[in-house]
Amino acid sequence: SASFGWRAAFGTEPPERFVGFGRRVLAPMAGTVAAVEQGQVDHVARRSVPAGLAYLLTQGRRARAGVAAVAGNHVVIAGPGVFVLVAHLRRGSLGVRVGDTVAVGDLLGECGNSGNSTQPHIHLQAMDSMVWDRVRGLPIRFHGVAGPELPGESQIVETHGMVG
Image (cartoon, rainbow, N blue to C red; front, top):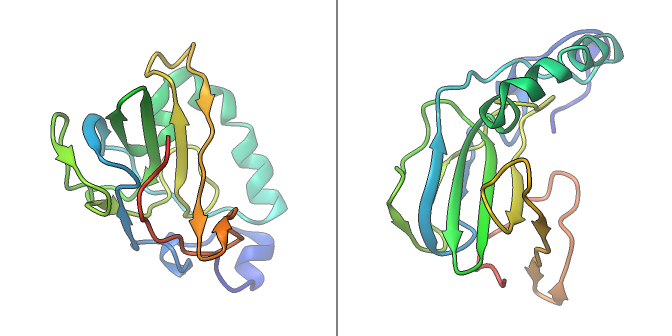
């Protein structure tokens, strides 16, 4: 996140204030790039109640506009029986194209604040298809030093591969 000040309490904030904005995002699994979107703008962050309420009023419009408006700039990697969505990437930072083969740890792009996002972060989602109105989520396991773990707030997760 970012330090909390008067702008965080009452208004909007530039995404550059957040520690994750612009950080490198690496492929969590090997596979083939099945989808790429990189034309969505990175917008200001909204942590304040007034800015958050105004943002909530635009939820329906984004949902009706489709995947790009919700996921923002994103990459989908296809593997055997799984599709992994990496969303809310920074505009202009994506270095992969549909059809590219990626290995675990390959650079996908940078953390942004595009799509349905109130502050810079990465949304990671495993799913059974890319038929967006019928997709089902699949479990994801993060491996830490002591075994499986759930990442904490503001924790940077290093990729060592994904187990299906």
